[in-house]
Each structure stands twice: as C-alpha cells, then as structure tokens.
Amino acid sequence: MAYGLLCAAYVSLFGGIALLRICSWHGSVGRWPALDSGACLVLLTASCTIAADSGAFFVGRTLGRHKLAEGISPKKTTEGLVGGMLASLVIGSGIGALLLGAVTFGLTVGALAGLLGPLGDLFKSALKREIGVKDFGSLLPGHGGILDRFDSLLFTAPVVALPPKNWSSD
Image (cartoon, rainbow, N blue to C red; front, top):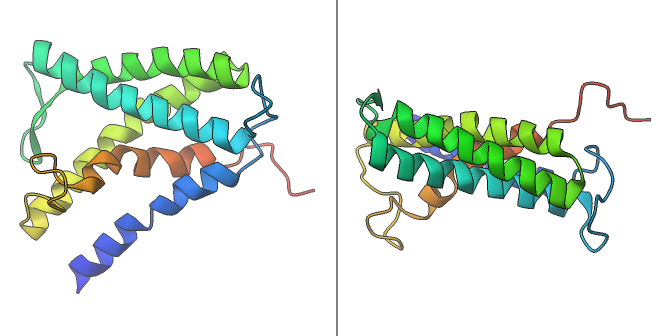
C-alpha cells in the first residue's frame, strides 16, 4: 500500500507541469507575442531538462569515470552530471533570451534543470529498485517506460513554477 501511495505521489508531480503552463508571475509574454508566458516557461523548462539529460548521457558515456550513485543508478557519473549542467545552462541562456528576453532567468532555469533533473531521475531509479521493477512500462522497451522520459521534468517544473520572492496576490 505504501508503494502505491508513493507511486501516486510521484505521478502527481505532473501537476507541476500544468502549473508551469498557467503561471503568469514570471513576467510578460517576452519576444514571441503568439506565445503566452506559461507556454514560454514550459518550452524553456523542457528544453533545459532535455539538454541536461542529453548532455549528461553523452558526456557521461564519453568521459565518465567516477560513479555518481552506483547503488541506485550504476551508469550515472559525476562527469555526466557536470556535462548535463553545462548543456542546460547553455540552452537555458539561449532559449531564455529567445523566448523571454531574459538570459539571467534562462540561466536560473538551466541551473535548476541541471540540478533537480538528475535528482528526479535518481529518485525514480531508487523507487524502481525498491519496488523491484526494471521498467514502469513496456511502450518504450529498454528505456524504463514512458515515465523515464519525464522523471527529470517532474522534479524541475514545480520549482520553476514557484512564484518569485517578491510576488504578491494583489
């Protein structure tokens, strides 16, 4: 029963993506009038998260020597973590400037994706190990299931959606 509740709580993190889509407290429309700020935030957050995952994979596979959390996810390396962070920062600054006209905010989202994304992936890996399953589905064999495509985003989106410190409900 506890495992079921934990899995339900994990899946409920999808609400962070929905909240990110509707939030407007991070600023105006930006440079693309056809996109509202929520759509820009989803694109920015997803781009940074995908860049972090991809950068970590390629750098870790090429240069990875030091295991990050061998007991949870044996293929993850600290070199991959650094590569993912750098890729996320580069994409964050570029997409932040392109969509929102805000390089600093893009770098902030990039840093969050570079740090929180791997935590989401490690959490999901630990959950799967504890439950004793290899994949959360069979639609994408060898990739851990559909949830593996979202695990990093599930931890990043709710934090990006948080209102800034000086936000008020006036």
